[in-house]
Length: 85
Image (cartoon, rainbow, N blue to C red):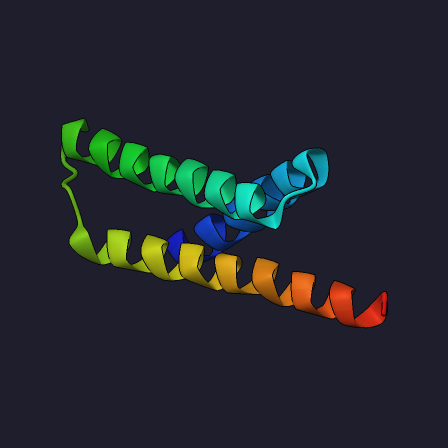
């Protein structure tokens, strides 16, 4: 679940920033930053919740989802450049 949520958050937020700014770099930066904030906020909330704890494995899954989303954004850029030539 952590992987999928961070993957989708990176794709959606990164794509929105990319389309509004016209810059893939900005899209990637925004997608990664907001998804990382989401992941860290979730773990912080878990740490403070009664009967729950901070989980490094969840953060690893979050990081892998962010990385996969980032790679898909870059792949989309490569494919778009190839198709538009």
